[in-house]
Length: 151
Image 1 (tube, rainbow, N blue to C red):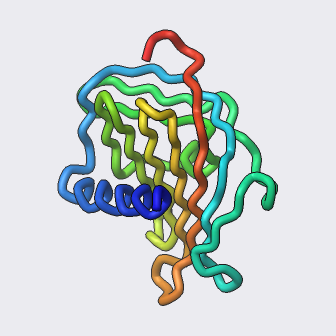
Image 2 (cartoon, rainbow, N blue to C red):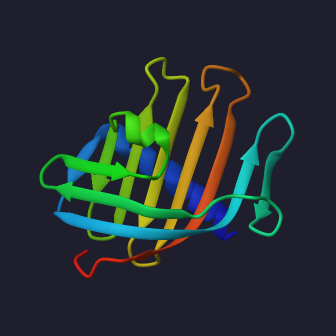
Image 3 (cartoon, rainbow, N blue to C red):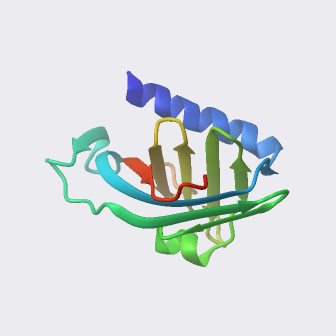
């Protein structure tokens, strides 16, 4: 049920984000270490099946850096090579939630992430084959700790 609520929240946030793609309400400097918890896969082999860290090999994310400056600067480093090399289209940050999304130039691949400050939960979603009938999804869940005292 928690997974369903998380995915629903992610979809809801992106629906909201379509109307307001940039909203940085505070300055922040986060230096996170994130431990992989589980992944949900949707592809030709799996139909939204969940795998835990004991069932699938995934790396933790070390040195995830999120820096924001009001009103419109949000920089995310070390979440993925895609985020490192592409401009963010959706940038929303407030005291509770950080929401980001980027697309490739053909808009056939996207990555998005939602970080909840209060729980330390990070959801990283990769969607490929967007223009195809059968989109592929990889939704990874992490538990993060902030290494900075300044949040």
